[in-house]
Length: 206
Image (cartoon, rainbow, N blue to C red; front, side, top):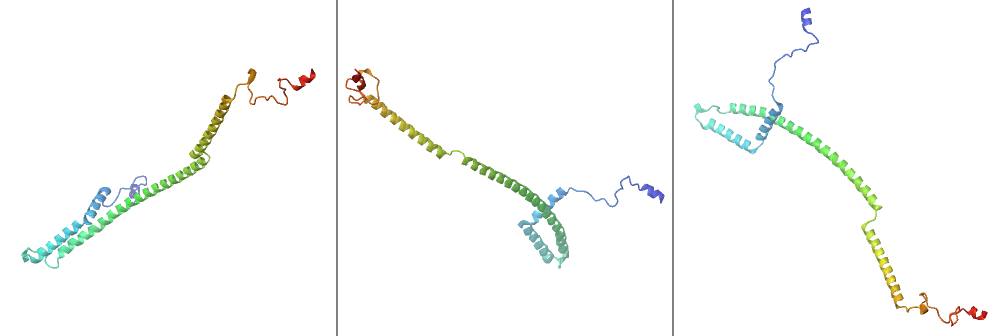
């Protein structure tokens, strides 16, 4: 008893007991099961299955008695169909589970992309709102056009006034006696000047 306790040491891993089953690649087996499930879910499989069962019935009914391998009640055919159904159901379930896993991964990816798109959309909406606020304080094209048009009109009016003044100066006769050109010529009967061109006060002083 003591020797058995010494043999079972806690610092050593225990050797596995029982029957060792052969290992296989789950991915390869899953692909194989999906291929079988896809094949059984087609119209070709139904047609071929119907042809085989009809030939089975015909041979075991119309053939000579010594050549019939599955006489009436077709016990062997029932066993074959039951065996086929017992294997088809797990294969179909395995294929459905794999499809469910793929759908789950695709759904998570779609949810992640939808979240990213929502975040991007909210960011773009904020940027557009900021641009609208900024554009409200910036001169627009129509405003610049109106200002330029107003400045052009003012320049045209100034140019027209200058041309009128130049025409008036050209049409006005030159001043007498080579004096300075005044805007308004002196009148002989002006109150401040006499006819001789002298001030009225100077004649009285003499």
